[in-house]
Length: 234
Image (cartoon, rainbow, N blue to C red; front, side, top):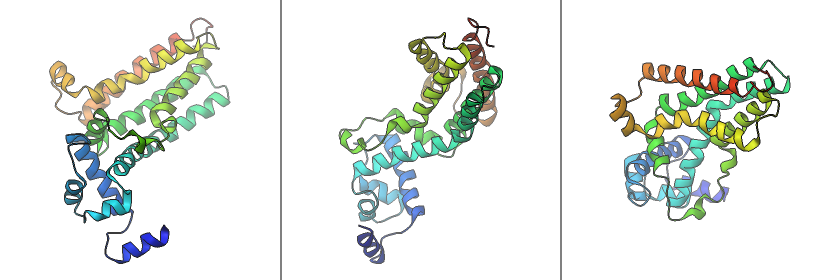
């Protein structure tokens, strides 16, 4: 396969990760705007400024390109939260003060907020995820969603709750609390028409983002501290 790809490149296909990344960025935007069925590979190639056959070269099929878009979102989100998640894991291993653990988890949410609202492709990603319904789901069979930033965030939050509560909070309740905490940002991410109606937000500016982060941090700290009340671990 590597030899085949080298020969194809030598015959004139665009080469390099930069071209592949440009195709993915274009596909994210078009899939988000029109849905999977509403866009063709020719549409994507034309807007990305590459020959149509190059999409097959890089991704094999439209479904393969769609799956590559999901993997790209996962990789970007994981990169945004990895440093903060490592800090939380280290604090849990060292049995740090619960207050320090809570503050560190709030920093994880700060990273997710920056990824969701401050990255260049944030709007395209939001639309893409909102429309994530594809007829051929077999193309996603190799995408391991357990390694996504959302799954890792959820499991980390459950571990934090278990640590703060000393095991007093049942796992099912801990998972429900985790969904509540992490869902705060998703409400702003996916309900943009609702935000426009309720708050007059046409976009999340950097100033508005800082306000959202401050509110989410405060509410997260309150929810997590409440988990320690039974055992006094606050």
